[in-house]
Image 1: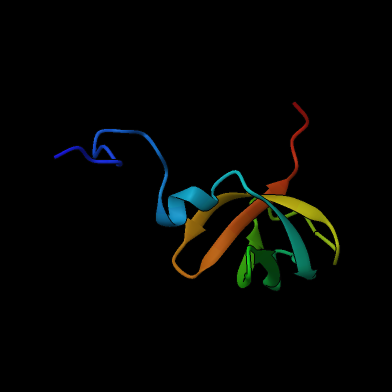
Image 2: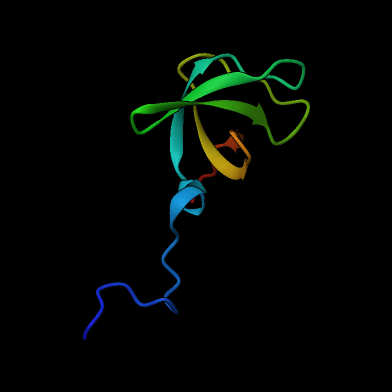
Amino acid sequence: IKYIYNANSNIPTNTDALIGKKVTVLKEISATKSGRVKIGGETWRALPENDEDVFSVGSVVVVKKVDGAKVIVSTETKD
């Protein structure tokens, strides 16, 4: 039997697949209060990676880490 998915492949799945995604801020994010971001069709609680960062509604940020039911986000990096 041939499998489409190889268990040894490095394809991110589940929450690992969210890391690196660009997402839109729906509710302001700061170190003192968590905000909300939209990922696909769902909204997630979000906190900034750095305590001094504040992201306003409509900003585009990048998911750096998934921590339980929340994501840690940072500014979009320029390549």
